[in-house]
Length: 188
Image (spheres, rainbow, N blue to C red):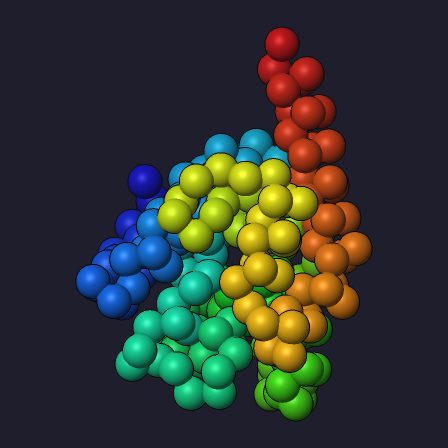
């Protein structure tokens, strides 16, 4: 495991491996493992970045980091304040179509302070997040979206954002799974 991945995993564990965050920590561990499986879908130089972002994607839920209520923004601000690489900070800021939830919460301008990356790394990060459930279990993207919609009430900005972003989220996952299929065929 590279230094960046180790630092990311250890930071996430320090912030989320608590009794009050046990489900979140289980999810993050599953997303970290899933991202490691998806590294073949990104360029070799981006693999450590992908896994590090997976470990850090939900740190904004940590009680000491919650500020705006948009976990991706709160996590990115923490990472930026602690001088993490800007590309990693941007991936955390924008994971899983956070821009849609930011608009729901009136935080789009604040999120726009962070660079939005599109492409295989973001696709794989979204795929890792949306194919792992709250207890770390593997789900397909439709099951995961349905689980999120059930967990948050219809008036919640999370519920509304996931509904609005669903086609974009599914497209991220499809692109990654197509890359994964291509990588597996190439390896055979």
